Length: 180
Image (cartoon, rainbow, N blue to C red):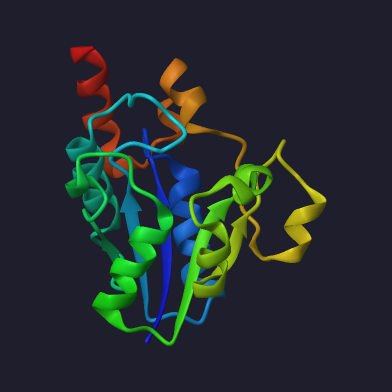
């Protein structure tokens, strides 16, 4: 079995995230893609949407994708989680012959700061999702997914633009925004 892991805050989930999943399913030779929302990114101190809400929104969007599973492993930790822990958990669970770890191009510059990075890079092959405005020459060292949708969750938290929200969850996002 060959798997790809796509972790992140997904706070909120947007069309670039969906494009990354679709592109990975088309380009990578994998049996399963596991989307793993984090409880709290180790480099952040808070979240916009609570972890369980993000998990439910992800499930709603990716339910139609046969090869996609949304994992609540990191959310269940109730604390910031490191990629190495998630990779080891999924490695034990699936015993894959290959593990891809999908990251955004904006993460490349800080990759060497990731917890147990040297150990992590022995376990996975990094796949970089290109991102407009974050192009780096270091990205050429990795397998890549060409996405380049110019949006970020940070921008969406500041001003929700429903044009970038998957149709399956637009009403949910509007309702959550009204409650804030």
